[in-house]
Length: 379
Image (cartoon, rainbow, N blue to C red; front, side):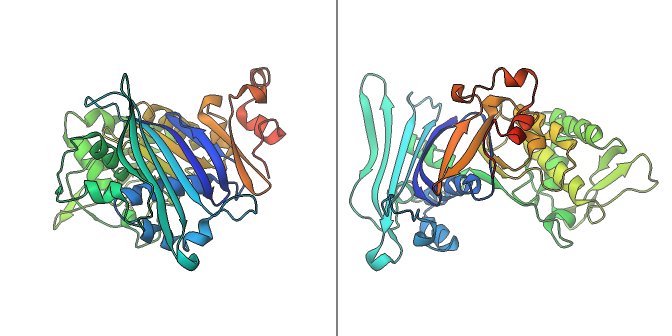
């Protein structure tokens, strides 16, 4: 499964954007250029597939607050997504197109177009959903596919698979590392091998990976990566503390007693969480990460870049960053540069021939070229 392309019109500074998506897509640009907005669009599509689009837009301040407000852009918002579901049901990418307009007297919004289609070889496009009549906020994709499916429903049709893919979009933001955050407290031992959006199942994921022969290699790679990033690190313990709860003990070579989650630094916790996320043997199909560099020493970002590239062989990543220290370790085909002109975002892949970077990259890194202004994406 792979997300192939996203088209956006009328959302914040994303007035008219088409972006081809790679296995690893890292966006860099100044504040307010549209990086986080693109991540928000994918989260909105996830909420739409679950029948919660109206609530999601309301949480962002309402439809009018996220609508592009330049004079030359219509009061209309459109999202178009193309996905290769790699299904045995039938070949060919699936396309989803959703158009929204302000509701009566500017209150709320209505969907004026919703189309889910697939281009099948030899037969042309097949439309699973094709609606151009106003339908309020109840979208047919979520309504049609969520009826009495049950918790363990297995997708059986192309639209079911598409909806399932959208609902599994996994956004990661600013990890909560405050004293009472889930990642600093004992956690419930559940049968998971993924650390969770806020690290709420990190300890269980590590424990389960360690205890299974099938996932033990992933756990061992996590330990090796921690030793690479923290030379004084020795090993982890994952003690069960009673009542179905588990915690983490971090052992260092220079200490006689372990450090527990409430004693670890923000950087150590975030690095452990990111490493476990990116090395998980069963990641979600699309991971969104906003500013992975937060709290991390610049030297750790070389490891993070390698982990992201490794993970992109098993899943797809869309990442927003401000860090030149991160893109220093990436290839041009992994970096998208975002600029803003006349209030509108423009997206350019760093390997675009128009940038003429081939000769420059013989002597400079992408970070150097970004600082020099050759790459764009500067304030």
